[in-house]
Amino acid sequence: MVIATGITEDGGREVLGLMVGDSETEVFWTQFLRSLRERGLTGVRLVTADHHSGLVKAVLKVMLGVGYQRCRVHFLRNTLAVIPKDSGELVAATIRTIFAQPTAELVRAQLDTVADMLARQFPKVRDMLLKAEEDLTAFADFPERHWEKIQSINPLERLNREIKRRTDVVQIFPNPEALERLTTAVLVEMHDEWIAFPRRYLPEGSMDKIYPQAQNQLDPTTPLQATSYKLQATRGLTTCSKGRPAS
Image 1 (cartoon, rainbow, N blue to C red):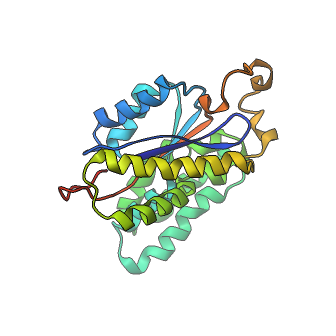
Image 2 (cartoon, helix red, strand yellow; image 1 turned 60 degrees about the vertical axis):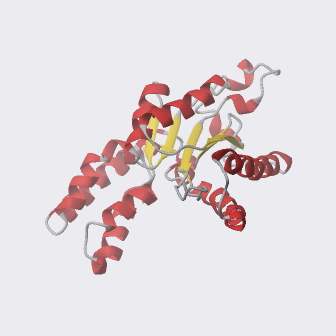
């Protein structure tokens, strides 16, 4: 099961869609992203997601010209998997300094510095950092006030927890459609909550730097959910009746 949320031109947050499938191939992700586009999704500037190869390829194919931000949290977990456990805190703290820099230039310079610092003792981490440099620092091309919320897919964790809580009650679904119906109901509740109690996810004034002409060009009959500055994609795991993960 995959879920996408987005941030609108005025800094609000909305659920964009979900899809249930048996695999996470490029074909599956392409179908999902195209379904969002066909339903009216436009204006996407950045996609934040984990580094599933099928997803990344689909983003490059469907969302032409859109930036891709690799989730910093998932990347950090990947690096910890290739080093001794007792070195985890040191390496994690060192990598986090990349995301604490005040300017885009310093962010990218710090990544190179960190890679050099870790090269001798942790050559695999160095290679991972340099290979992922562009994807890890894509956030730096956007307003600094947005950085914390566009560096990872952590904002989706509340959605994932609520969906998991509901699906754990059922445990086994007779078919993918049953899973989709329950998940959709949960997402509709969350979406309505975001709309009914509007708290800007990102500062409205800062959005003008991304959509400088948005307020003048918006058609008042066009729903805001049709335009999304940032799309976040995440994966869930739920059991179907055949004992297969629907993810």
